[in-house]
Image 1: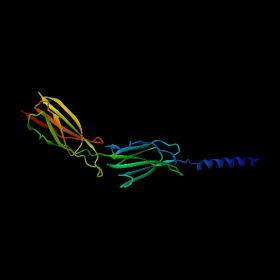
Image 2 (image 1 turned 30 degrees about the horizontal axis):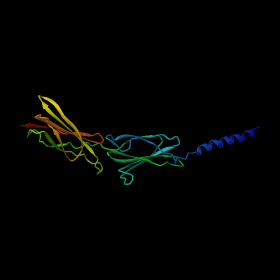
Image 3 (image 1 turned 90 degrees about the horizontal axis):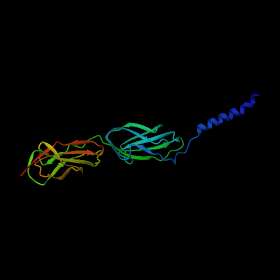
Image 4 (image 1 turned 90 degrees about the vertical axis):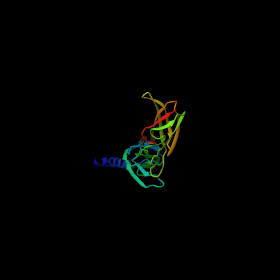
Length: 224
């Protein structure tokens, strides 16, 4: 009677063992990255890297290099089982990529670029007119200033300058305009005075990551 049960037991054991060896070919799978978005400028050093989960993945390989894959100065390479990885990175330019992996195959990497910028532009310097300068009455004033956004790893990125001009009329501010301009080391812009004799102006510089600085206010007196 006992011999009747030997064969079924062996078959069941063999079937269970085979399932442990089964893996899926993920070489043709395509991973979708979620965040950070491509070419993101971030003022925060704390980030969460996310990608879509793949049912065939045993783990994911994520690599983060600075400044780029072709000329890396720093290189981070790790395997994770979850479809996210929180990390803290220093200011810099990065390329990051993720692939699906298991014991028998791996997918192609999916790449993105990331810039971490925690440094605000330099405080803009007002050049003309001088603060509390007295000028002849004119239809417009050409304001001049200097602004600089420090480069990141020797690479200069665009920044913006916002010129705000107000007139002072009987103790009240009257807006003469707010102008959003491309940042340059030496910048100028003409604004109509509309006949007001007292004008104040200032510059706010801000970078792609949202860091900003603001100049002091300049005061101009216009006389007939």
